[in-house]
Image (cartoon, rainbow, N blue to C red; front, side, top):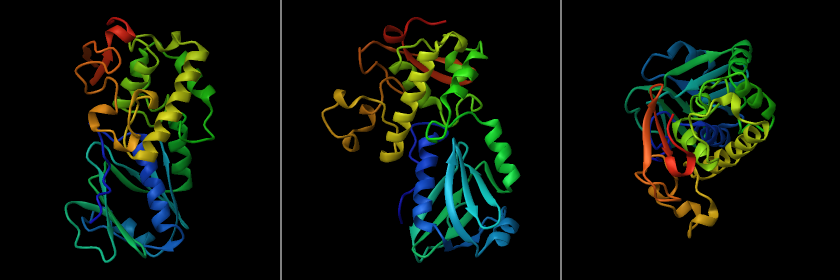
Length: 275
């Protein structure tokens, strides 16, 4: 059994995890006639309709994973509890509430407990893209869309960064770490950021999410601040403020506060006071 569930610090997996799963699944199944089934039964009709078709690719749009077949697509959103379990062939009996099983030549992947697993048409895919902001991991993404979205919002930047229509793929951990790296107070109104600040933040998103895809975990410390390769960092060494009692950079206490139902972490010394 290969443990290819999504490693996460807390809560919903963030965009780097979904992009990593897309990369892995494309590598394992590309251009193969795959067997699809729904052991749980909740996706049975859709799985039967696409069973035996050629798996063209998997790709991510923020936190959304798309499987592309010759006819239509499958759209997956893991939500809070969804995960993937991968096995070498021959695969064992399904364990747990397996919504979808994909079986190729050498691998099988079970999808367990997603919030969304549905058949998608080309039109559905267009509509999904239209309601999401730019994905920093998509090289075609236009940073100007992110800048414009911030200009239209008076809400705190700490709220705007979790709005998937502003930027696709960010979650609570990256939100806290990006603002700390920018030394920005999370309660700063989004429309007060300068164009340069917004563009710099988007560039930092690209870099950090790419590191996340490579190592399959969130790492936001600078290479110059650690004495070991990223692959050998322990969990408590990868982040600056999120989930920490004290700021990794200045050792000041990390402040925690509820912000619209999400737990916000920031360093008052590095980022300024509260509201």
